[in-house]
Image 1 (cartoon, rainbow, N blue to C red):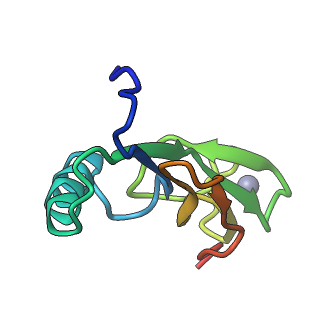
Image 2 (cartoon, rainbow, N blue to C red):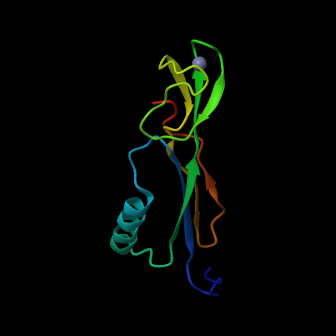
Length: 112
Ligand SMILES: [Zn+2]
């Protein structure tokens, strides 16, 4: 953890990433380092908030968390006829820049 340095602009960008997103966190973090160099946000931090996949089964009605990122079939009955409740998130949940108050975002891709 970095301690806060007085007089330096510190930014924190928090991103929610669903478990079903084809995003490898390490790769995303690497892209972030490139982005912040480009944007001159040398002090910026990227915080990844991984969201566990969750499905609602149309066949048996069960709601279950999904451990595998390759299959969303219902763990209870094996049906593939499911609604994905969580797991496709990819959204910026907050951005903090210097002295500005945190910007909260409720916009984002859900259940896409
Ligand atoms: Zn089921």
